[in-house]
Length: 352
Image (cartoon, rainbow, N blue to C red; front, side):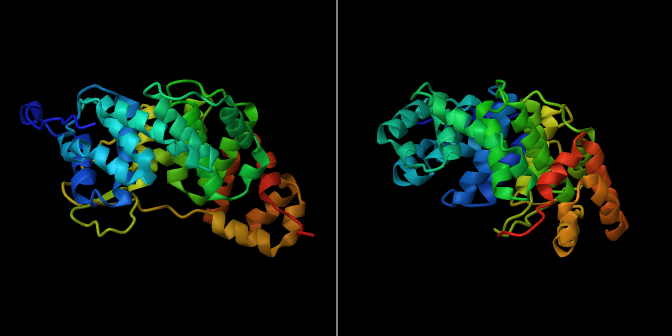
């Protein structure tokens, strides 16, 4: 487990610095310490997107990761609670062209240590299973995929605002599809669940979640509403990159990452913004959504929850501010079965 990759040769290899290289430099060296779990999260997400989209093309300058890579076996042994991050980063670095063969040994060690047996979540077990399968280790649990699809098929529940289960749904599609490498074989009910989550994201103008939904629909070979992708394309133009502005708090990096990932899957670009070097802060300038005012209206007027959309529609639009009403109508027009979405969203009555 001590094979070390040398820095020699990388200076000759690096001829130009692409936006991908600048992002790698920013997130690997300047924003956080390697001992910070959020460093693991940010870099695992960045490398995962790059690996799933460009693979081992040899385009990237990965030299900034070499000190981390060369010590990753010690880190994994000591910080084994983060084994999924370490496996993901190690595999992506190697598959992106860094060289080395540590991930095979690390995956075998994780399997021998039965670290995945400590997971209580099917979603985390699915991530661990996928990582080990990348190095042909372990055996697939067919019951796990069945449970994930069954969870994804409860469409009405995904029409109710719940960001935790919404992101779990998109990640189920990522794992079942191996990040777009194969059809996840989603039942029509699961595709409807994705559309319900997409409507919620659109109403809230949550471009982070909307991007994940649109990526998931593309991976599932399902139609993606034009209005949603237009909104994503517009949101990609709103990002600001503040040189040396990162102060350790959370910024909009994740929304930028998945927005660029969506653009790659849709053939509309990617990480092509001019990103400054150093500890860059990323801000997105979120557009106002209608979710808050709509939810408040429906909570205060209990009768609306008992009405079908065709009946409640005019009352709701009359009560909302003009811009909120326009956004609600855009959401309505983006899918053919908004009335069925509304039936799950309305939540009329009282718990008795």
